[in-house]
Structures are given as structure tokens and as C-alpha cells.
Length: 191
Image 1 (cartoon, rainbow, N blue to C red):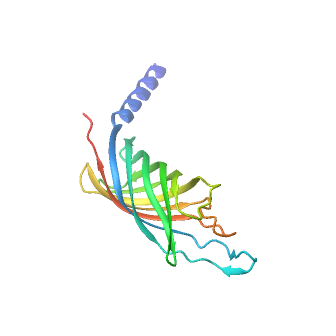
Image 2 (image 1 turned 60 degrees about the horizontal axis):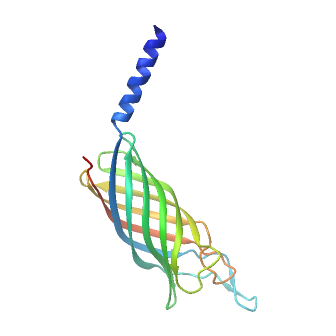
Image 3 (image 1 turned 30 degrees about the vertical axis):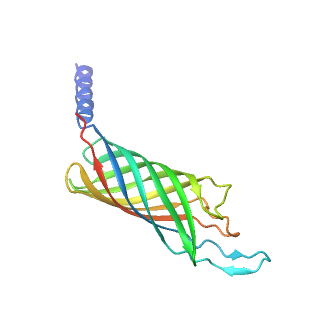
């Protein structure tokens, strides 16, 4: 009798968990404010130290698709595919790098409106400008951000993405991506 009660309670618990599951595809897009980190001291052709290179931000855009899998009331697993235009500026020279980004974002919802984003991405270089390291065609990065939902379909979000693989073959320095993104998202209702 105890086994039957235990199995019934387990099945009821599982059915309640899956009853909260929903899937919503969506679109996201907005502005990127990106730059490369200063890296280590860089050296010129003759081995003289030129100090740390201070890149300034470059503004561009991102567009993407996602599939939000609401697993519980407070947790959503959100795989994403994004096209992201990034890079940096140094003096008058602009470094442009375009990526196809595959990410898995964990969204934690604290109220019906406010959520926090955390997760890894792998970014594949689609095209690049001059001096971009040809040996590094991918970037591994982590995102951290927050969002606010105005209703069940439309929201805004802000994220910071930090790459961990050097992207620039400019010197012996290790320059990685840093991207601040601000944008909006729209989820579609599936019937």
C-alpha cells in the first residue's frame, strides 16, 4: 500500500511539474556597445613596450531568435541564435567582427515582470576586419543581464557579454571581447 501511495504521489508531482511547462519562440534585437579589453602590455616590431592599448567602444546591432522553455514558474531555459556585430575603435581605426552566436541562457524570474539572465555562448566569426586573429575563429563568452516584461509577449533587456578567447592579433597582447547589449524581445504565443 505504501508503494502504491508513493508511486501515485510521484506521478502527481511529475504531472504538476510538466503542467507548468510551456514553450514560446521569440525574436530579440537591439544595440551593441562593444570594445576589446586592454590586455597585457603590447610590444612593437622591435620588442619595445608600448604600454596597454586602450580601445574605445563601437556601437552596432544584434538580432536573434530564441526558444523560451518555461520549466517552472521561476526558471526558463532559453536557447538562442544571434547575429551580433561587434568590435572596437582604436584612434581612427575601426575593428569590425561579426558573429553567429549560439547561447543557452538561464532566466530566473523573481516577479511576473523582472528576470535575471545568466549563461554561456559560443560565437563563430562570420566576417572580420583587419588584424583580427585568424587562428581564433570562435569566442567563448558568458552573459549576465536582466530583463523587464511589460506583458506576456513584450519585454526589454540589458546584458553584458565577456569573451575569454583573444580576438585580436595586433600584438603580443591578449585582447578579448566585452559587449554591453540593450534591446527588446517579443515572444509568440503557440496554440
